[in-house]
Image (tube, rainbow, N blue to C red; front, side, top):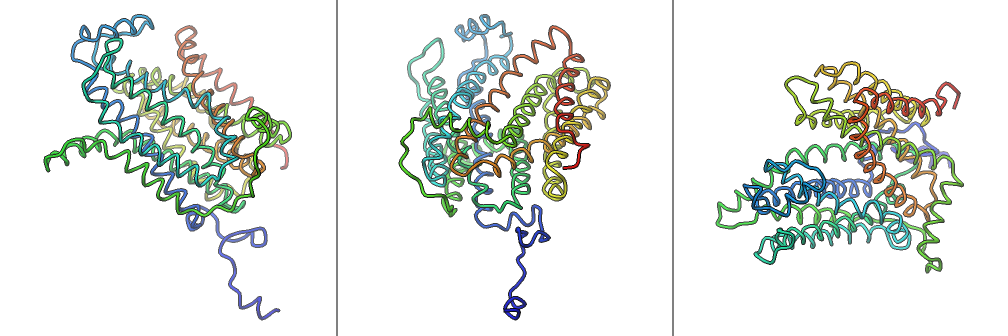
Length: 460
């Protein structure tokens, strides 16, 4: 017995019996199933960002004319919602808003329903099918440019684009909870924090790359294909990305619990998912953290315009620079959590993150107008967000029963998308009525109260 024990190699991954094994990003990417899921996520995340860029590109190229008088219906809509309609950029923004709305409605309404079906179906098939169907849908995009009837002064192709965007978002609502529920099936519990950190860093990277490089890549593909006498090269990017995501995910082997024929209605199963939050305080608290965090981040999207306006040389159109710095901070925070986060309690990580967000919001108001300080504070805010989001997501994965994960993650997507939408409206109205500084203080107060509730001074 002893000789056999000495001859067997020590496991390289930390487990309950080998807690001192190596951890971090370099270890979690060696897990075969998770690595395939991660690569699939990269392609899927990039495709989602490229999709928005392509829609705006098509709107600018084909459906917004050079003079506002030629788009009378658009002018009437803009007047109804009190939106300026003088420049071409503003007309593009108005049509792009339609795309955003079509993309957001399923995210706010269907998440819980999709989560129920994710629990009923094999998760690998859900992930492969959702990406494969999205790849097929976007193949129809060139057809929308064909001449046809007009409704409300706009080509039928624009309305078809909105329908396609709605269907793409519906499929995404199935992919997201299936993907989150698959992570704890592929990753040992001791590695979940690192795995979620890698996902967070990848999501931030895809956002920066997708939005920053999407337009140059689309134009480059168009020019490349024109060199060989072909048109429409830009339409191949999305099918390629979604198709590669489906291909990578199809190679994953998931060991799931046996499924039984569902006897309850979808509504009863949604209620069962809510019951998990009542019975498991850790899951409920983590979900509250995520909803609060995404509400603060959504408000920051609006406040960034006012913050950038106060900086000489940046101006309101430079708000994207501030958001990019917060994304960079989140990526840095994700790497830190992956490498050293397992040495701290989740409660103290969340309290530290909320504290960093509190100080960032307070100081952003006091030091507004200074470019260097503002960029640094946006990075600190993003780092704090990572310290809150990653432990919270890991806790939900760990403490939710496998049979209920799809429902809980579907509910999570519902709540997060609502949390992302409402502050976009409220923050702008509050800034207009009471000013930027009071709004920052209110947000800082909410983050501070949440940090105190964690009671980080107590022993865990």
